Image (tube, rainbow over all chains, first blue to last red; front, side, top):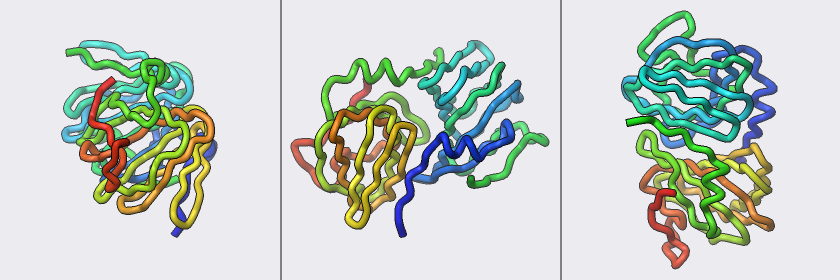
Length: 120
Length: 120
């Protein structure tokens, strides 16, 4: 079985919806995901999982309860487990995520915006 | 304690040596690292750890025993544990790595090219 490389741009080209992360790789019980963001998500935290956001296009605001982080292209942040966060994208943002397989996108906040695991 | 974002370009600006990965983040028992590659490394594998290579600048050849992978900017590959690989950079390449904290850069091949954990 051949090992396949992944071209991130091509994956974003296959992705239409906002706030619907899709899996593009797996390693060590974690998933690499791509997601298009636009607008405001919802406040949530992940009980057990640290989560990495790497911005590949655009500019992402991540609001925390006591600070704000603006991520530009080529910047990442790791939100430790338990820390409430609210991603906000005034314009469309392309993000690569890295998180354990157990992670639900809405974390502790189950809602109609929760998305099941899906590869692209 | 404030959560800090990481600007990958700035980290590469602080990095001089080739083949010396430096830690820039940690999550879920894994490290995010940056490394400048130039020339040929050595054949090795990681007994227990899958390893992600994301090319941020340049073009990286990863030779496997039965295939070759050319990674361009914005492309990544995950080398599963146990798979022998040889990274080759004809010109300088900037790479972001993701791997468990237990990972040694030379894997099973202990050599003078083994590098201890170090943050940048």
